[in-house]
Amino acid sequence: MGIEDRGYMQKSIPFHRGLHVTTWTLIVLFGFFVLNLIQESAGTNFLGWAALHETSPRPWQWLTHGLLHFDFWHLLFNGLSLWWVGRIVEENYGVSTYIKTLTLGVLVGALSWWLTGLNGLRLDGALIGISAGVYALLIVALLDRLDEQVTLLLFFILPVTLRIRWLIWALTLFALGGWLFSELPGRHQWTYWQPAWNANSANRIAHSAHLGGLIAGWFIWRYLNQINYFRGFALFKRKSSSLTPINPHAQPSRTAPRALDSSRAELDRLLDKISAGGFGSLTPEEKRKLEELSARLR
Image (tube, rainbow, N blue to C red; front, top):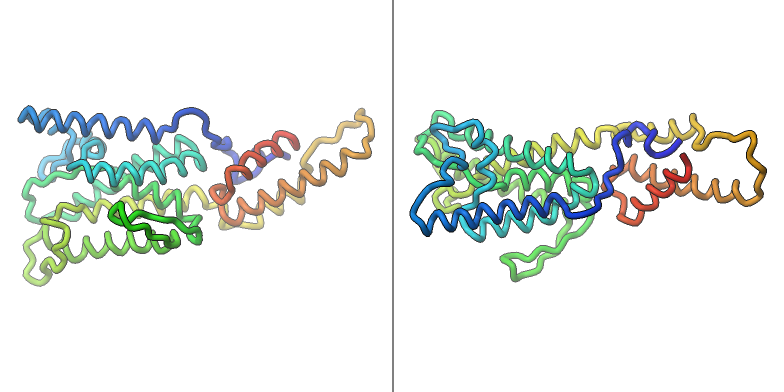
């Protein structure tokens, strides 16, 4: 039995070749940023159809708002983050999962933002940016790498190294705190709950959209890795099935059994690692080895 016969690997192994879809996403975002510069220089508003308006949202705006960005720094932050986590999702889970995660993150983020202002001031604000989709990709890409370390350039100057689990916690707490103490009371006229956190410059940061993206990413990650909650499944199938068919006409070989046992043991090790930590826990070399062993032991 090859790797493709196992319960948690029914889909094709997502080895990526060619130009990343993440790269094409960044090209599209940059193109819309250039169009926005042209719009501002010409004093027109031909991209007004794309932003998600609070008082009169159009069906397409729930997605198209992700194409626009407020300024260069907004695009740069989202673009660098997308380049990092988007490629990880694309390589580990495939192009289809990347597109679905990005799309669902943008949709859930937009819904969270709109619901946050429900029955509020409704000052005809508009939501722009692909941040929620990036947050969803971040969760899917990194949630099974919590103990790995990453070095970030704080303010693009100061290098800071920390574990991925603390990065996720920091982003989650910042989004939750901004939503509770700034955005939520800032979009309503409440006497009992006023904005206490004014660091986001007149509510320009859509913390609610970020929270929506994080939640969407968590559910997607659970769906993609749900088989890992039954860690004995891979071992059970391995014991109850034969990895290769027996050919009664084949000539006996003295070296083949030893090589087959070695390949089997290596495949078992890789499958146990997938069962314990998900496909994303494999290194690029282990993924290539897995593909070779699966083809050899079919």
